[in-house]
Amino acid sequence: MHLQFRPKDSSTYTTVVAVKSSSTGTPRATVKAVKDGYWRWNFTGTTTTGPAKATGDYVDVRP
Image 1 (tube, rainbow, N blue to C red):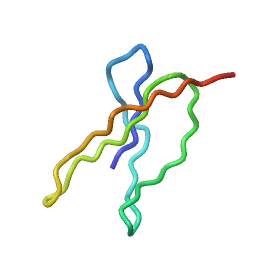
Image 2 (cartoon, rainbow, N blue to C red):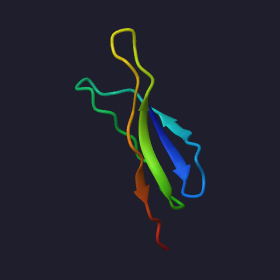
Image 3 (tube, rainbow, N blue to C red):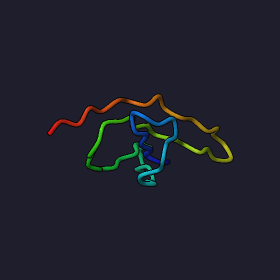
Image 4 (cartoon, rainbow, N blue to C red):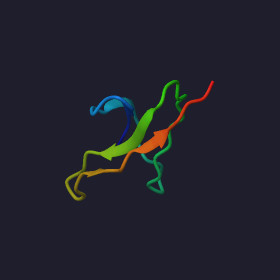
């Protein structure tokens, strides 16, 4: 599973960190947002589960 970021003036997501899920299937990552943009989870899939991309959530970084 990948945590991805897209700046507000871009259409391209970039992977910030790749994480493994916990034993309960919950992904967890801690990153610091330094500029406005969209964050999403991207699951590339497995042999038994298809891929999935979350809708991006907008984060407005304030000074």
